Length: 477
Ligand code: HEM
Image (cartoon, rainbow, N blue to C red; front, top):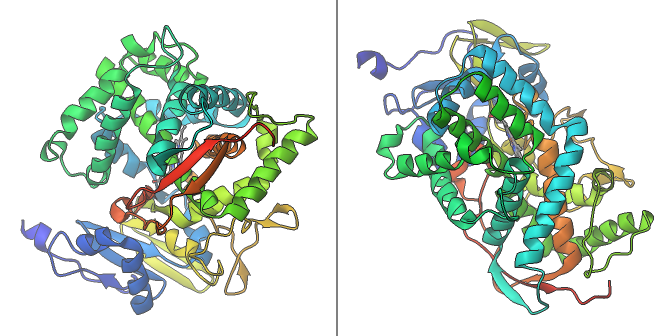
């Protein structure tokens, strides 16, 4: 106990240290309440680099994005997977994985990228149209829905079908809404699980997780058809390694979380910003129609639209709109654990001492909302990432071009392997929505605030949902 209560003293060459007055907890409560505000305040007081005692861990925040490359390229002494290797098994309920299997799991991520993206993209398009056709494209009357719930229900099901496959008979799984409800209940507890709060302290969460894992037991999954190569390969791997069925189910469930946990709120924000900026929506819709027309397709709401991976790549205003909404809603922390005591060189004139076991953290939300990098940072500008008809990549701080300026998907060794698939599927969802539907927000609703409860973990949810009206467009374009 004495060890836990003892706070540490700053040594020479270490950054300023903020301990907080509550032993062990340190500054965890203030950080959890509003991480962005908390870090901005300490940046003003202590400068660009400081260490904060948060729930028993010492986290050194590097706040200046010009210094990010010095952390991201430090592969040997700063490890990402030490953190996920410990936290993910506790969160999703599988046994810790030995390093050989871990390497194979890492290699499986290649099946989300490169040429493998083609079949995934095709399958996603088919599944999106299936869900839209059966649930939403059947009449031309105005309907009203809560936008986040609407985006989440369509994307959850279409992503599930694309990753895990269709049922043995029929095209759609029964019980998808109940599955999503359980998923949401688990997701609400996700920040506490990641903070390593024991699951038995979290009410029904353990029972809900068990139910979710059950859906992915090999006896169920092996009967699905059209399962992605990615999930098939992982299923084969787990079988080869003779993992217990419940561990296999938990690994698949973890992948469900990874594939929709951030994608659903990201899809909501992109939809919300386009619907609340009709001029942007019109420009993006026109871009989609033009790309189709260039390939000889005249769009009509009577037919299924198909957008190939190449066509999606050409939609730079749509991509810019998605990136802009990611910039405004992302709050992930990039974490590296120091493998030894060492001196971390930050730039030509500065190095800091780091102790083994300490965490080095980047918090890109501060960069995303920096007015020096992004003029009027709180304003949605759909074309912020386009310049002279091409993708814009030059953003500056202190007159220097930034190597990293947009980081919703993490960085370096911890970069999200599903990022290309994620952006593609959001593009596909928005293309279908913009092409087929007229949409408007119901009057009198302010822009929803970001719900800070997942700060540090990815894309934030809105604190309230938004009501919108939509109907199928009349046949003419
Ligand atoms: C990891 C963001 C969609 C699969 C990550 C990380 C971030 C991230 C920030 C790194 C976590 C960290 O540094 O601690 C996002 C966002 C998404 C998205 C913003 C959507 C907009 C997806 C999708 C998939 C996926 C669709 C899979 C189909 C993964 C996996 C990891 C990961 C497997 C862990 C990688 C590892 O352990 O090295 N994601 N992600 N993500 N993401 Fe995504």
